[in-house]
Length: 72
Image (cartoon, rainbow, N blue to C red; front, side, top):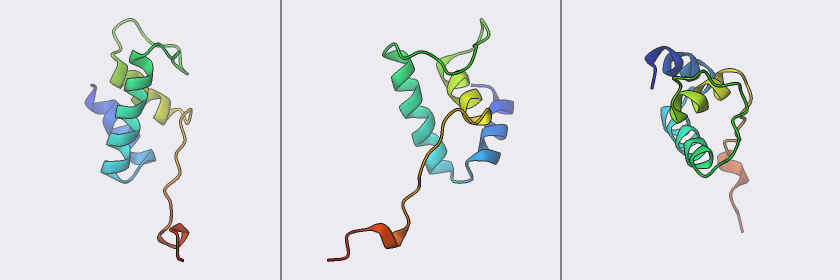
C-alpha cells in the first residue's frame, strides 16, 4: 500500500474507520474476481487499486445519519 495513495484517499474519506472498511471490502471484491474500475499499473496491489478508485471518485459510500435508525 502506497502511503501517498493513502494520504490522498484520506482527503476524500475523512473517517479512518470508514476508509478502512471501504478499502477492505473493495479488496475482497477484487480478490474474488471483480474488475477494477481503473486501469491498474503493473505493480499495483489490490489495496492500491482500491485506494486509487476512491481517489478517482469511482467508489462512493453512504454514512447513515443517527436520525435514520429505527425510532419505533
